[in-house]
Amino acid sequence: MKSKKMCAGVYWVGAVDWNRRLFESLTPLPDGTSYNAYLVRGSEKTVLIDSIDPKMAETLKNHLSGIEKIDYIICQHVEQDHSGSIPMVLEMHPDAIVLCSSKAKNMIIDHLEIPEEKIKIVNDGEVLSLGDKYLQFIYTPWVHWPETMVTYLKEDRILFTCDFFGSHVATSELYAGKDPFVMDAAKRYYAEIMMPFRKVIQKNLKKLESIEFDMIAPSHGPVFDNPEIIVSAYREWISDKVSNLVVIPYVTMHENTEIMVDYLVSALVERGVAVQKFELSTTDIGKLAMALVDAATIVIGTPTVIGGPHPSAFSAAFLTNALQPKLKYAAVIGSYGWGTRAVEQILGVIPNLKVEVLGSILCKGKPKDDTYAALDLLADTIQSKHAVAAETVCA
Ligand code: FEO
Image (cartoon, rainbow, N blue to C red; front, side, top):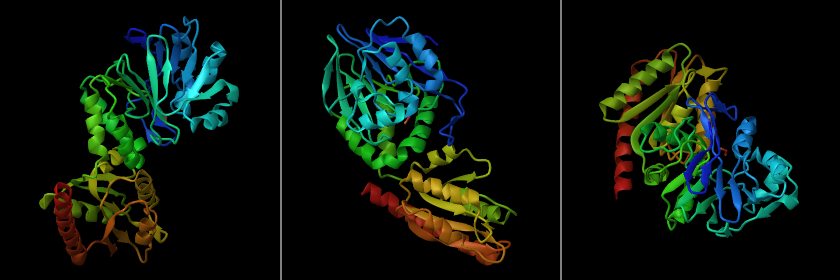
């Protein structure tokens, strides 16, 4: 794909990775992704904002082939999908200087082996003149690494945000418009990448409130030309408000745990509680992460394997703990053969979740009358806890 002009002197010079299906050997990419870099040409200086994943470096090389001089390369984030082609750009433009936040400098040296003298730190709030255009650097740490910052092009009212507000989606469209498909990808991206940093994002969003922008140009996915859509979505996602929703990741071996899960699902639905269940041997963990963005409760369903939880249930609990969603309540249900430590081990792996544990229901072999009675009681408890949670948020 060719470079694209966004406005006078501002160009998208990224790459669309249509076929990539996994990121960091962890994150599913059902819709591919893009690596966006931007070229800003002022009357006196030319700047490249971020680079692209090195495996597509040739695409960036082609975009930049007619550019006589790049004065600065802004490294907003050191993760290699954005910084990995900077060494190639420096080979093309040996006089260019890499600009970055104070935390980024040593990371650039460690990850990219760029000589220290080629790197210059810019301060939070510092302004760089390109002649007729000015760029302001705004530190936004922990979205999602400690060194992250965004860059504001005041004259064209564009905020370049790297991963912040990004979405893993491959598209030929430069702009998001009001496309709900992009918003779905943006929510998935928030859930998988940004959710652990929800509290710090609250601070970073506040910091950006004084800036007037007409576009948000992230480094994955399309440019948000209606930025209020993505900003208000983020406000919702990072808020303390939870939905009347129970997420049930579960796995079953001889169907007993699944029978319990299905019974609980029906019991909750009868009580007006929404449910999303995820069978862990087949589920897309990105979908699970999305469901966790505003769910009030998680119920983990697991059989017992060699005395502990099924590894898939343990892994889901570990992942949930890492993502730190704003869950308020948790429970564990499942079946075992003759003995089990599944509950202790599941609860032991979720210390980051500030949840009230509503109990556990384990049955030996097949679920029986007392199992169903306990599941009904759990559904009652969840219903009343959710009603209190809704009142607390409204108050
Ligand atoms: Fe898109 Fe944190 O890299």
